Amino acid sequence: MMKNLKVEYKDYSTLLNGELLKNKSDEEIERLKNTYIDMFKIFEKIENTSNRIEIYYLNKQLEPLEFKMQKIFGFKEDSNYHRRWFKCPKCSCPKMDNQDDLGTGIRHINEGCIIHGTKTANLIERKEKLEKLSNII
Image 1 (cartoon, one colour):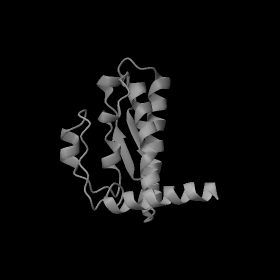
Image 2 (cartoon, one colour):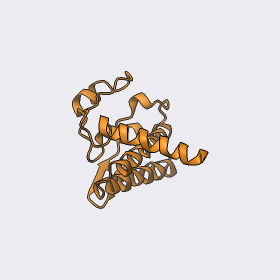
Image 3 (cartoon, one colour):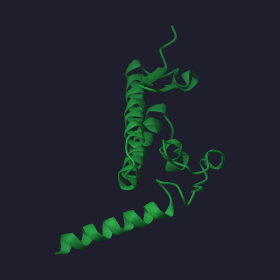
């Protein structure tokens, strides 16, 4: 009997790769589905804010979910194969270039990207410096 491999949350959906999951238990598949739903909830939060710093930190929450997905699928946990950082809403980094270079450690960044671009990196750096200073005072 074929397991239901469709994952849906509001306007988001994906179909899990049945071939990769053929030896997985129902419990593992449910954990994977719930991880995708958690990712979709982060996508929704990203879409519903325009605050660069908030979007940056929401995007950072995707990495632990990708590690969890890799573990459930039975893959080696390796951030060089993560793709949600550039496939999330509001990311304007080059999709095809990043997809082509998965596994190499190369990340193509659009300097104007609201998440990964220079302006956001500078804002995050200033925010972290201010937090360190406030802890000293």
